[in-house]
Length: 106
Image (cartoon, rainbow, N blue to C red; front, top):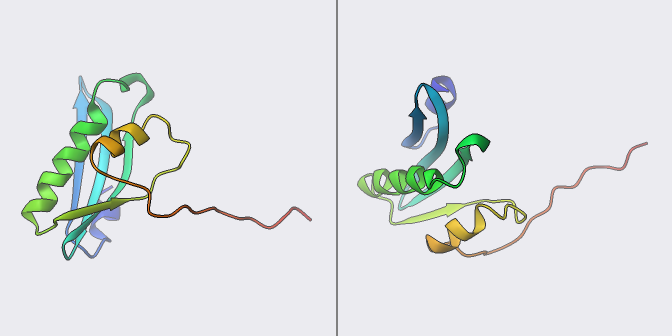
């Protein structure tokens, strides 16, 4: 993880929750100018529905604010029904949709 974070050129923040030695949740934020990109918000299946995604994201918003960010953006899968209400409550809205395409099998 340290190697991956050190490869990001912008100021980068990492929020991580551990309980009883077990990883519970994590998220990465990178600041560029007055924007923070939010990446890889993950909550372990055994730790879901406890507010941990909110905890790590809000921690990164506070960190990013201290690094000059005033806005945040993220990319989330449209079918991620667990994450969409949280992001909507945090003020995010859909600006565009995207698709991944792969060539048909030969």
